[in-house]
Image 1 (cartoon, helix red, strand yellow):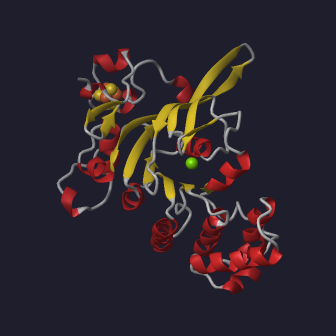
Image 2: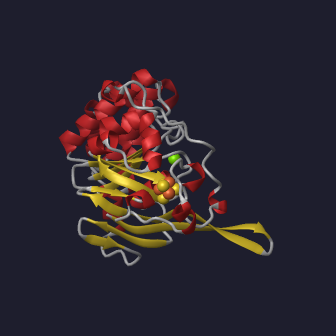
Image 3: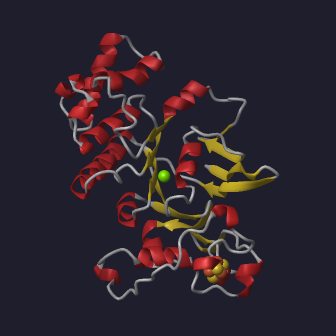
Length: 315
Ligand code: SF4
Ligand code: MG
């Protein structure tokens, strides 16, 4: 569970002038055990930052992280190494995260060695077992990353994250760098691994089709904030926030939504340093009215299990 997580950076734009960049600005999320929460939004909206904070790769500037009933803070009430093992992160670009000079076997063994788990023989056995789990045979252990296809490399990226038998995995755009034909194989692998190993996922993507396929619930981010969160089918069938409405309308050909008008968002994501008061989406919103300029909306429950941050839905 993330409670009011913030990540602010001080930007010196001029020697006498400093501005605060609110990369993540008060994000609260929770993910049930064994479930997948999808996190969507345009690049630069802060979703990777949220993922890295959730995986404890990055310290938040404010807010709380609660894992399995325990608050994770600087005092390390839970042993940091134990937590490191239980939470893992899979990066978008598997190639850049794999040391090109190591064999696949060594790359997979490394997390076990770092955490001093098992002897050499036991580690080798776990590497072979993992290769089989992710659909590659043990001969891959002696190959190098450059000898692998993009899809195979991402299998290794996933395997490496799973070597420590984590419970919670943050998947940051895990298929975005892959050909569409390979994407489905990796997504299916992730789904079957989730079932077999009872994994909990935070699934980050800008691709709504992929998020739809993977998630139980979905949170939509815009400029460092969650603007809408609900069950996956509810979000796609009844989007409330004007931003979500536009995103969902751009999903190509779904028979159910054939009549849906495609909404083109005007303008680009504004510079986060130049966001004025009021609703951060106002510059692109086709429903903006006077209140949107004066007052920032807050995320609030609109109906059972469906929260949105927009003045159109203020009770
Ligand atoms: Fe649009 Fe106003 Fe809602 Fe913001 S608060 S999304 S500007 S209608
Ligand atoms: Mg990212």
